[in-house]
Image (cartoon, rainbow, N blue to C red; front, side, top):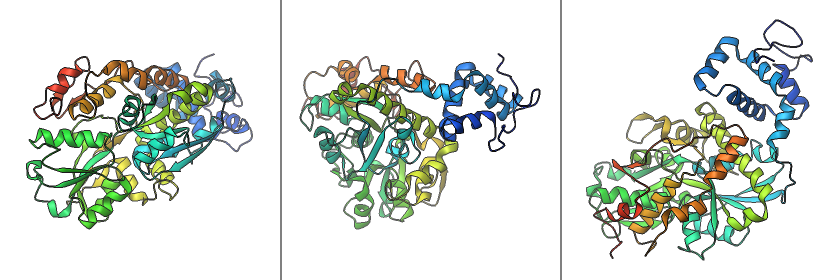
Length: 453
């Protein structure tokens, strides 16, 4: 059967409407009858279209040539949505349906959070409670105490926990990277004339946790400007929701923190955005979807369902056209508890910087879920550089146990997400390329480091 098939209810014409007259197309009619909501239906349709026409340019040409409704009808003719939905689910029964997932109220957690109000968990047969949590140490403890089944985590946390850095050694896994970029250095308004980091000696900065990209990127940034982060500035661990208040009170001079709090500081007129962390490393990981390895082994089918839910959510978040919808979904008190305009500025990349400028940076935050091994290796080099781990570090071996790269690609293929063969961008941090095959040499290559201390 040709994928250019026309409406079976009106042969020879483009697909418009359905037999009952209440839906835009027969495919939407069938989906409604099967209990599939429009958002989920669009995800399934995209998966089929990607499989039928792998090249993006050809897909776009096809849709322009025949029209969106005809394209949707053609997809439905090849694979009815009810059947596709059944195929998208693992047939094995879920070991556990009632789940608790912890999160910190920041935009980095967007895929995990939005999956709740938008129904992605429910579509996988899961009843998930997303639990707002006060800080990263508490997140870690609740995961280790088995109070949370899975959690929003900083990308370095599962590596640190697996190594026993800062907590009892417990094998952990990173299922997906929750977001890339999405952080900034924000300074108090009184420091508008101190844009050169060489002038920051003696200043106090907040980061959300020791084992965070925020800490490692701040250390990297000031060290590249000749400052020793352990001697020339003070770095304080501060929960993200408390960063703006501490900036306002003068307790800190600035912070390298997650959004929306950089933008909230601008919104409250207490700070300005010095730079986005994508200017340090464009495409850097920030947060992750973390889970105990033991839990994965005990609940393989539940884990697969949870994985699909989060990936479907990430797929929606990757599309800039959905960002305003997402901002409204995650703004309420149960989630981020922030003004929609603040979140929207972060997600869309159209924002005020606090210095009288309006910036347009589409890549301010993005949601590529693939846990590339090289990212984890880079994180370990910085843990070694700054003395968080000592002695021999088996970089690749550690990362391969923690970062579920193969599983991520498998689950992405299951839901019809494009599966990249390799990391699209080379890791370049402030102009210096990173070769993940030589991590020890990289860690030792910096003039300012604690390896020999």
